Length: 437
Picture 1 (spheres, rainbow, N blue to C red):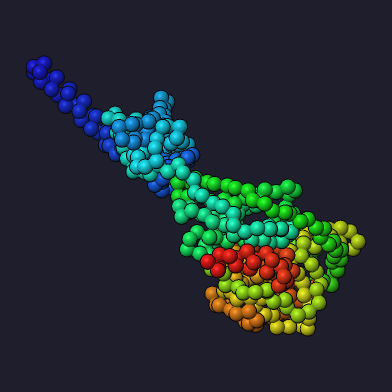
Picture 2 (picture 1 turned 180 degrees about the horizontal axis):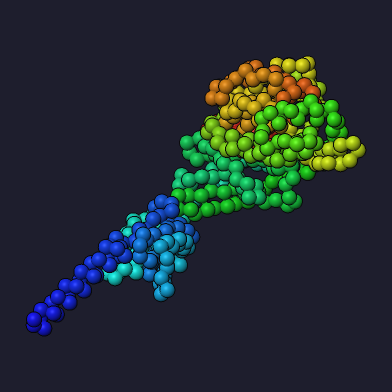
């Protein structure tokens, strides 16, 4: 046999071997580039997040650039000489002004190569809009006096490019809602009972590109001292109430006192998380009108009452009471405090049978410890409609109504919302100029 034959045979065997290796080990597909969130705009400081994934080979390089006209700027050039595994999560900060880009159209370019013999490459080109101009926002209302534990409202104007706007109280965001077509908005805010001193309060607007404008405005925070109360827990109360919770929650087992402490702590936090979730989305229009109704009866506990709990003379717990307790006759009719939509009507842990009403634009009212519930979630109610009866369900020692007001899920003092003078001075007087235009 000739040398040519042996050479040809050897070449065929090598090619066969390479083919088998490609089939078994190789990966002819290029890496996958996956955007973790859609990106259509580039603001002043844009976070770009994407993943590069491989099935068999490993990632060896990733390049990111942006092109505008004939001007292409490198943003990142990542090489992995020891190979980058089967997945790379990339997070980059893009600053168009630093890169010398102008507002307008641009092309984001991402490429990735794998370690396969042929260095398969993926290339993604995505059209984006560079937008570095932040939205405009200005205060309209005056006299922003806010009690700690209380509520307030702000009337402001915002440019049409704003995707969202509202008020920041510390790091808590209170969404604003349009009241006129020309950009006038209202936002209701809450100052938590335990708000730090001082606490920043600012107007904020954000556009689709992520550009943010923040401005401060004149306001006065009025501080007050809340009441304190001693709560003595008896064996009779524990024997009466703890079986209700043991029957509903598998995790609540053991001695009555242990169950009580779990209810007053763990279950309280779980219930408050549920309330905050329910109040996380509100009707965009104002549904309520005028001062809120107060259920008839004697006050038994105040908002933000600092409670210390004792058992057999020994201190066992501390909690804050975030509502007002009102007692009248047993199973007294409970009326909706104002117009709204029922967003919760069910059993709610230590609150017992509970109804939550959405009054629009982030304002909610809560009614708990009810003996009966006469409404269903999703139903509209008018001010004065009977929604249930007072009772002792949940962690209640006697028949009464626990009533709370909430602004975007933050508990506030209900007394303000019962007061027609407070409503006029802090809300309707501020809205009047916008409504009269």
